[in-house]
Image (cartoon, rainbow, N blue to C red; front, side, top):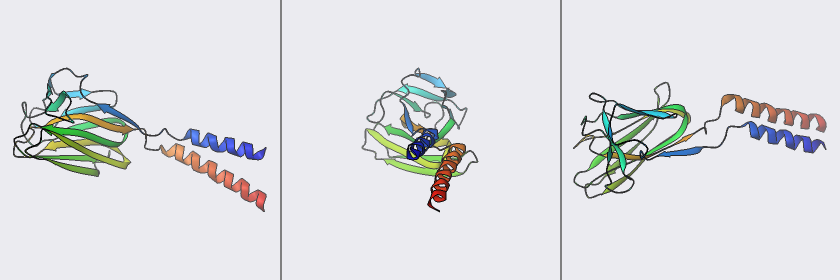
Length: 197
């Protein structure tokens, strides 16, 4: 009978832990084609950090992973300034597709930062000049990601399409839940030791 209560207590402790990561993917289809100074949802805000801060959501399909509606800064503000995605909730992983029509090599970069502006992870992707489409940049961290920066360098800085953005939220454990879980395990261990003595 006491084992039954221990198992119920242990099950309750596991239930108190935060849920597993849930990936959210944004393909920008829900945003109208046009020029923006920011794009916002309940989870994030996207801005462009160069020039006058404007960028386009445009219809482009050079190949996977660029589906149709995609971000591009080149037509409003050519240059190496990054896009910035600021998250409104704890995020543990981020990825974004980048691609272009063939014609030039594209050097692309991604950096993920904590709320204290500490670099947590980074990635680079070189898209060859013969490629229609592109690949993905990814970053992940056990420390919550507060924002990410992504950009394209020379020779035609900013002349790439960004699409198929994905992020994992709610997988960063809350300190209170972990403390409760640890306290419960310690209590079970103490109870077991007391009986053994």
